[in-house]
Length: 327
Ligand code: F6P
Image 1 (tube, rainbow, N blue to C red):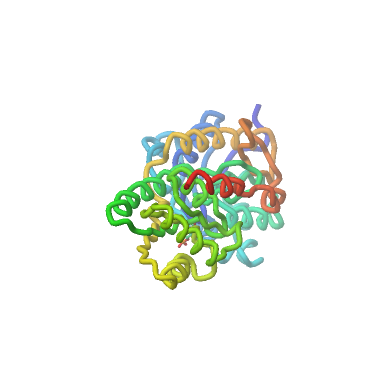
Image 2 (image 1 turned 90 degrees about the vertical axis):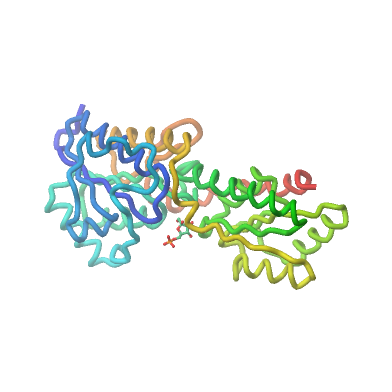
């Protein structure tokens, strides 16, 4: 049964786009339409709320997008949402448009914006985890992570071919901002010799000692996966540290390639399930929640708790396991 006062919902995609955001949007719109709700899609995240840039979405608006990367709504980072006057303006516009509930698909910054909105706007707010970084609490997985991972893994495989041919040391920098999820899973999946992530203190000496050891044992081609936040100076610093000990290296910074592309099956599944779940949560009268996946279950976790959740850390025990896997 519909919440009695619920008529119009808003949806936006915000922050770094992630493969699967479109699949999530499709699920949200189709579920909402099925329940006779109107859907307003704001363009370029919170910026669209501030500027009054939006489109009415119906079932046909989201046709043929389940397989498309990026986001048909557009995305942006919106500095205005860090200031009370910007948030107040967003709240005023949502009221003016008669939005009863807002669904925010994005990462940490987007959920902070959602929490800030709750101070000034009485409508329902549900967040959906959409970021390649997998760095949001309250959910095991974020929409986009699995696709970014496959892209990074493909890069490792390709680099391994040329590293093998030349007996070279390759450093691959992957995204993840302050989190090492992409690097850790890419390194394990790609059989990298070394994996450097922000969650583990960087120690140049240890890396160099291990490289010497690999070489002494006859292992010539080496792949080091470096999370962009692994150490101050990033992958260039790691390269300099290794080269300082007489080893030649080649560096590849994968960059935004990781953000694009058609979502893999797991991202489409996660996006679709959570999209439906989020609308159902709205219909049930829920608010200020993150619609996430914990274990096999869809779960609502208060947005503030999700943002404060320090338990959602990459499984660093894999680094120890990799010591004998990469011998
Ligand atoms: O949060 C997603 C992400 O791709 C991070 O991995 C990366 O650090 C950041 O966004 C890059 O941001 P921008 O696209 O604004 O350069």
